[in-house]
Image 1 (tube, helix red, strand yellow):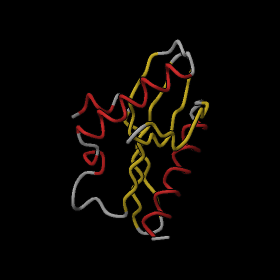
Image 2: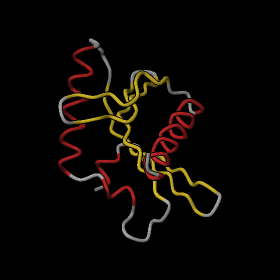
Image 3: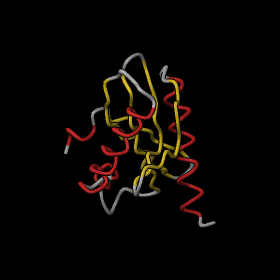
Image 4: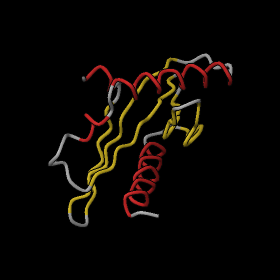
Length: 119
């Protein structure tokens, strides 16, 4: 397995722990629907957070939150709709991005709530 895959998994684990500490209940990870995969589905009260995790060891090429393009957004929305229907949930759905930036031996975590409105 490539180092980028291992770092990606570590980033998702860090994001899951981060959300749990903020009071979210993790409902699912790596949820797949057709061509999309949702990294984390978490719930806090009546908010269902559909979370995309982006991990990088350098932010020089592009801001890491900008790595979520319109096609990815469309796939995440379809997956979220299906998840809510499958589980018969009465929730408000929010799309978040958690970015993990590794600098030397430290990690910076940023949680962008309602992230798609920031584009």
